[in-house]
Amino acid sequence: MRAVTMERHERKRPVRLPVAESGNKSPIVFLTVCTRNKAPILARPESVDVLLAAWKAASHWSVGRYVVMPDHVHLFCAPAVHEHPSLKTWVSFWKSHVRRHWPFPEADKIWQRDFWDRQLRSGDSYHAKWDYVRNNPVRAGLVTRSDDWPWQGEMETLAWHEP
Image (cartoon, one colour):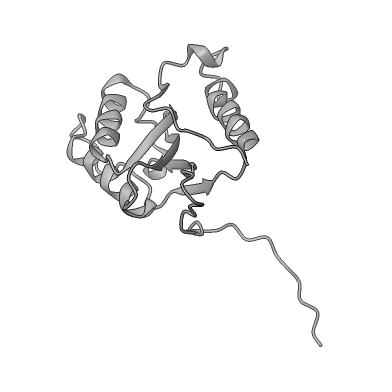
């Protein structure tokens, strides 16, 4: 038999697993969406206003905590209704909404084609992931304290069910 060697390859597209629900426990998904070519166009009042309006309009999923960085968005989300669209459909909806209402007409394409998602599996991972996310502006050298970053918040409290 031939020996098989494993090379580390960077994925060009994320693996898209369906959101798994367990009983009446709402799953929480950690989502990262990047701008096209990592353009630093998001961290300004007009952009954030359009994002928040898009998430409100895309009401089949709830947005919990979020951080808007110059070139990407991190957020936690969960289905808001029992019969909800797929995560991919929901993200496509609000990306399209943002594009239609974008306040800067010179922008051509705003979003990277795909996104990265991970369903959280334990209560500790939710809190640990939030601590990591809210410190992104500090690690990027944009502020010295995470609380000073103006483009973060929580739209809805996502109920986390301990195992």
